[in-house]
Image 1: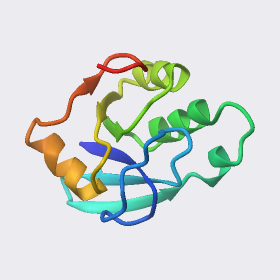
Image 2: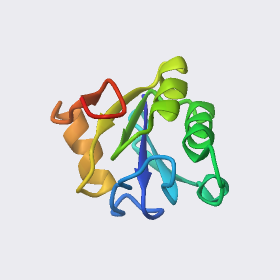
Image 3: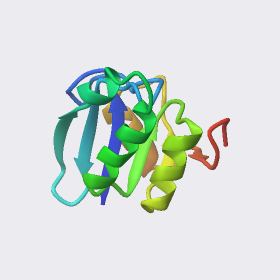
Length: 116
């Protein structure tokens, strides 16, 4: 399984980004290998419009099964859902802590962009 965390930086100790589409980086954690990979999100950050959609498309191309983030906008949520990606709220912690909390079943699944 691939878990993607929207992050403020490029390491597992980076904080979870509060806004999915404007995250500096996506941290991909492969549960089978235990390996982390950082993917830069600079092109979406600098976009005047559509950052969430661009970010969601990137995450889908990465083969994500799960996304952990702060707020996810409605357009990004639609793209992720169409790609079969489930979204969980994991803000206010590091990427590593968020993945560990997800694996323990402690993160709420987001069903819409306004909350749970």
